[in-house]
Length: 110
Image 1 (cartoon, rainbow, N blue to C red):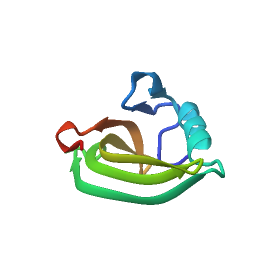
Image 2: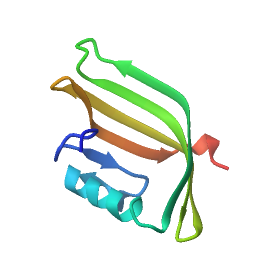
Image 3: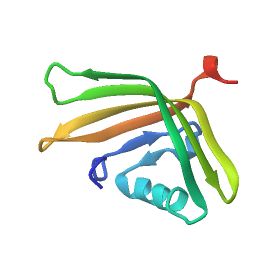
């Protein structure tokens, strides 16, 4: 997996039971949720993207508001107004995500 750091990824989600620590857990999540035939991606919207680069040019921070529209087993599976933040690091000339976090944006919640 080239976008995340093998066995170094730390991924917090809105519920504490879903925290992922390591690439193997992340791959299992992707396989379970996004790869089955009964999952259908519809569209993704990204708003308010911010990226900051460290003075060393090795670490960065990003955040944006995510609206993600999908179907799972024929039912809507929607995330709206979710803040996605993360910390990528440049390793061997490639940016890899070290940490990421999703949280509901309370003041945008409907």
